[in-house]
Image 1 (cartoon, helix red, strand yellow):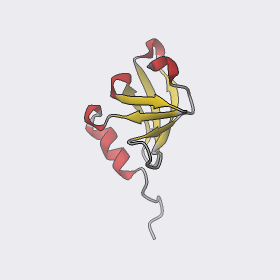
Image 2 (cartoon, rainbow, N blue to C red):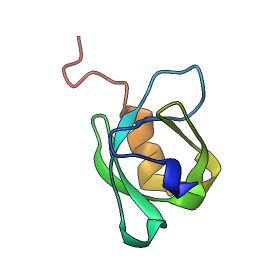
Image 3 (tube, rainbow, N blue to C red):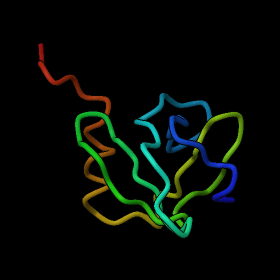
Image 4 (spheres, rainbow, N blue to C red):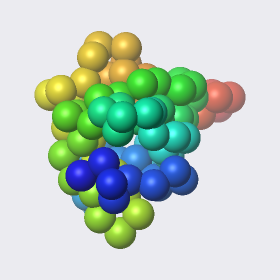
Length: 83
């Protein structure tokens, strides 16, 4: 699956939902990728936590992500300037 992930691909937690970030780069060996999560920064994500890749989209498997990544995902769609 890592062969089909490209830098710049959008990252999602489910098909049909808003994106939460994008792929910054693939790490050597293809076992992990660096993902920028909106309002959270860059996180290293193992390829084993990717559920699907298609049409320039990377869909993550929430059950395989560490707590700091889940927390960042929870804050991804929040405004940096609350109203």
